[in-house]
Length: 48
Image 1: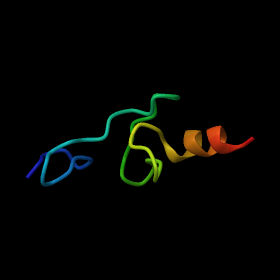
Image 2: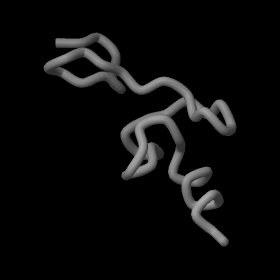
Image 3: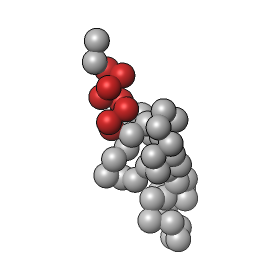
């Protein structure tokens, strides 16, 4: 099991930082359709 609480227990792949604002990503703030952006930045980018 991975020691990092933001990592997958099976593959140990972890979340890093949002590519837009550098906010550390957690399971609670990661965008549902991208593992590279926080939900806030994904929302702002989706606004037209």
